[in-house]
Image (cartoon, rainbow, N blue to C red):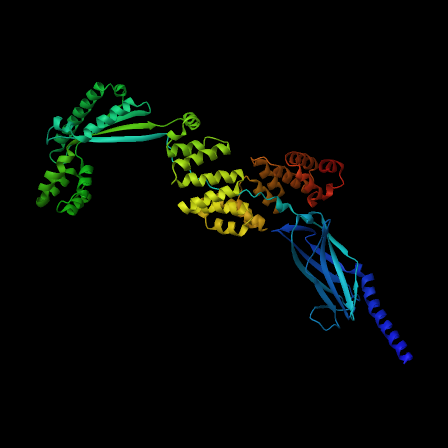
Length: 571
């Protein structure tokens, strides 16, 4: 019995030694296994860190009965993040993993992804291997594969562009008024009854009011005189000319009586006459209920000769009497047209009224006044006043949200846009709600709303471009941004390896920012422009000292980590 016990222990020890011995051999020669990591320096894309590892096991390395589990691990100061494990097996193992033969070795391709965190910027990628043989497990030493992670896409500015709805303010508003003086057939004298008509009285009142109003400019007065298209052409021409003279002469006297000084200016009264008013005849026929109207209109379209026209129309005997009674008398006339310009408040006057008496401003005036101020808080106050005075105005409510977006007041902006949407749902307000969603980090909702609001204008393309950068789709982002002179456009050019284009775009970006200087340093580092790197970092840190902490661990500056100038800047 004792002999059997010693024999069992000996057998177990031999088994254990042979198992561990086989694994130890693999561990000792672990350095013979080659790894190719793509990319060589890990990168963040769309909040993910993705890797591809091609592993080559040499011949006579992989124990026929061994199972090997490899786990890529990102190590950083505050911990580590494990990728999914990959298991391979020797050729004699009965399992469903990829087999590696002992005689020839073999290759394995691995792809994995983990969520990015800021701690990973200063990190190293290792492979952690555990081998198993006949139930015994042996961990290998962690083996370094790569440095990382580059997180330059995280510099993207979340600065979506909202849309302001413009005002309809017109500083100069043209106004006109017309009146007709009708004449008896073959006469050119002005009858007293014509001067008592309501339209004539209104024209004279319009002229006098314009003359007395300092904000109304009398532009001119047009006198157009006509004869009806019946009778001889020579007679009609003389008649129309006389009617022009009588009408212009009379109005000139009336303007002098009313002390309209403008009337004395050369060219204020313009005159013209038309011998036969076929255009007027056609318009009256089109709106009339005269029998055979369509036939008469057809005659007008078929013949251009006035003599032939008149003859053909007179041949339509049933209709001609009605024409003579109802249409032709309206064409024996002089038409007076008074043209004025209503001149609104100047920019300075509007600013002054906003400060002193904003309640006198009409809707379009107050909406326009907001555009005269650069200060966002002043703009917000003006739009708030507009919304209070004109509570049904969608534009005022939308523009309150617009300014709040620029101020970074996302909750207030959202409340205004939601109210505006209740008043009027359209592409503009959907774009603006999407801006708020993006600023709050709801990328999916923002993308849905932006995609549904393309009618809001070119800014929607820019806004969608931001989303594509966040998602790591730089080709799509570049298409949306086009060649706009924006920070994000420069960032995407850099991410697409267009370093010269990125620098050129940064040079055209008007808005100054710490990120702009920092990205210029990143691009310059890629091009080994050391002085530009240091100069740009100085500017960036002066505007945002937190960027120094980022630069200290940013792998984009790895080759400067031991540089004394760099160390002095980021300390």
